[in-house]
Amino acid sequence: MEAVHRALRVLEVVNRYSGGVGLAQIARETWLPQLVLARVMEQLVRANLAVPVGPGAYIAGRALLLTEAASGDGPGHLHETLAWVRDAVGAAVYVARYTDGEVCITQYADGPATPLVDEWVDFRAAAHASAVGKALLAQLGPDGRKDHLSRHEAARFTTHTITRQDDLFRQLDARGPGAPLLDLQEYAMGTVCAAVPITSGANAECLALSIPAPDPHRLVQAARILRSEAAAVLLALIVAGSAPGSSRPEPHREEGAGEPASVLITAP
Image (cartoon, rainbow, N blue to C red):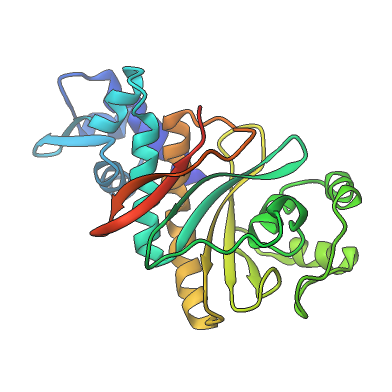
């Protein structure tokens, strides 16, 4: 994502000046237009990756400094980012990665008002029917997709599930650039989901949400916000140095939106 590349370029400059650096100098070193740079700085300040220290001057933020100090708090910034996105979309959010030929949920953030989808069928066996799975399959080539479906039969979970390989591939390829992949009660009746591809490493990744209600209008609104915040999550993954995990540990509790919530992060 171009937005992430811009943010990383700016962070590199800010981090080089321990005493602070002005917007004019950042612009000279990154070649970013003034308005674009202003938007990038706003995002970095909100993410606590940069801190204003005077009129038009910035230093590295706490999240970036703790990550570089190897204090183990890199994932803490990812916690905060996922919780913020959860509250912004009003739904549970997930980060998934395609690892060793399987769909793996590596992080999630939920809460009492934003419950996780009931995983009544293992996500590894439901890539064809879930937004998470579709977003990962969409990033694979034809051979990779066929290999996955040869190992996981496209079973019918609801009357809306796409089970024909040609129909599924056609849907994946018809998606416009940056458009979300949707699950319209294909995995479970009464639940709709959306996912957008993101990639911080060699493997396909995605950011997704689930809504426990068949509300198309709400899904469209939430998916639009999810897409707009995908760059922030990708940046947090890169800064945190997130690495794939082979299993899902028990989630621990975090505070979010004024009520108990959980954020799961796999061990780096």
